[in-house]
Length: 98
Image (cartoon, rainbow, N blue to C red):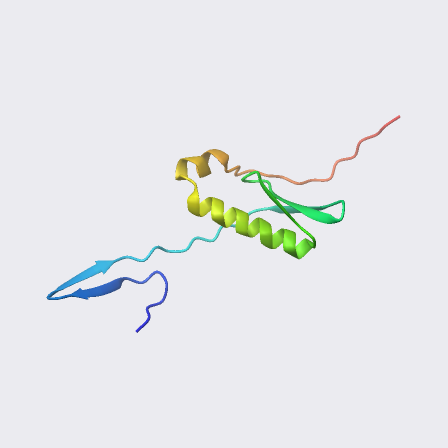
């Protein structure tokens, strides 16, 4: 019988039963900025300073999500903490020239 993610897994080993906690999945809500560049699109996660690209907006978004996921799975927690910017703001700005 398959157990849902995050539930304890019991393995019967002879007379002993070993309980192992399955890791809980975390959901990270991050900011994705996508802009046109040449014939494609560049995507940037401002909080982690990770970028990717794609031929379409959706592909650039998917590729960025994959890059972020791979980084978060492989990076040492101290590196994630160092790179993570918790306050990212996007706001319009007017500049007068001339």
